[in-house]
Length: 491
Image 1 (cartoon, one colour):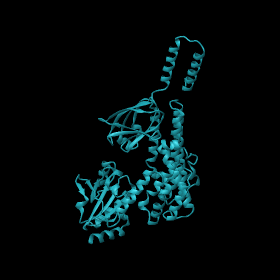
Image 2: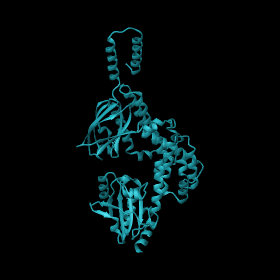
Image 3: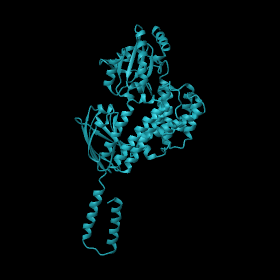
Image 4: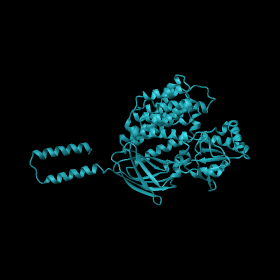
């Protein structure tokens, strides 16, 4: 019996009892209805327990963005257990460190999860073991993630395919996903609420693949002279961008909305044939964003994304950002962050004392920047997962080898979350100089002290410990940076 039918029955019985004589059987009828109501409406609690191997952090966080809820599960000897308040079915995110996966939780769920972080790093979602009560939706969603991970594993080569081959591959894959969803529907396990979300996520993933193709194909396959079909840019246009509840609930939808708006604005600027790095383009983007028919939350996010490039912008664009950011952004946290950034950058002007650092090197020895005084310090802030960082390594090695007899300290500071991956890369690439590891990734001191928003980032410090350039030329600039290093070393 559905909940609505139970309520209707309850109202009818109350009506009968009010206008007709009854016996003491009434108490038993009420008791029966109460039991029926309780049985059909489980308590707003979900139990989560299980084991974790190769954990990346000491706790597990389960969050639901729509409800703005977050629960922390302590891990003890590789095991965890908790009861969460789950008042309505929805998508939750389970994370250990920066690794995690989506769960679909309902009131009354009792799910056991056994997983290995090393497997998640490799995109192996089918390695997760789920059992218990109301776990089927989560297990199905993870099986789809496994398929998605497989097609994304060699996606760079996929983006190099001719447009017809790309379209055939992606459409065939997407058809198979929809077929899997239709088959799962036949089991009767899940309701439409679940399918609305899982279908939306998969349609967004399809759209994003076409989006990436239009963005990167020409760069990756310059030999392909055929134009990219105009239809590629419209894939996903049928997905509404104004669902505030889904925007708060699903990261996939949130970032899709932001990317779609951003792409439309950038296309409009491109159509006006403006130099994308000019002050005119920056002003035009502010104009479009302030006039955008979207929530202030979306405008805040897009505006914050825009000014995050402040560090790398030219002086004219920086002036536009400084004069107009408050006109667009109303989020107090973002405003405070930008003001802090401006203050930090002011302190990072050439000639000012460079922020110090102290990190452990590949041999376990603590290296302090103060100990390197008397040498020019050339810092590379990087990570093994950063493609542009890796492309600078051959140039950096060549530069270091050529200038090894100069008073120059070549310092590479990794912000990897995976220390093991860093150690393996240092050995594999035979990296020289000072190889340091910064704990905390994007929250590490080197990142915050130098207001770093993207990597690779190169920093140049003179022999007295003063800044020459907090955003120095890269090794791939070759003669430019080499000349500067030699001049500083000889001074």
